[in-house]
Length: 166
Image 1: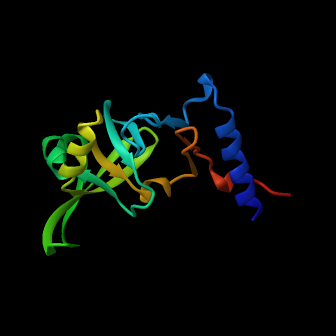
Image 2: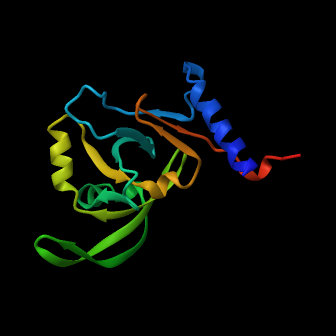
């Protein structure tokens, strides 16, 4: 319990010290609360390519648009293809999807490819050319605070095993 409390305190200190010289662990949303696009969109760099992603902490997995991926395979490491069943209003569809990883500066993320064309078109009409959705699986890798009020994500690479209690 003490370890968790100290870890949370360290994250909050990093988050509160929000100055120009402390932006290494801060990612700001690309969209303001006053735009037509209300979902949080962030920019992440992958192999020196700036990409836009939706943040969806309710999603268990991160998803990459399969059409965009097919044109940018060189940015990712292919893991395997899997057959999945997708249930929807039209019934159940069996689809083959790829599992791939990409290396961001602050850690790698595993994506499953899927058709996000409708989502991409909707946000593209609002000025955001997103390529995927970053789900909670990415944020479980390291301590993270998503601050919707200040439209920022605070992350910290703290080795919790290095914290000593007396």
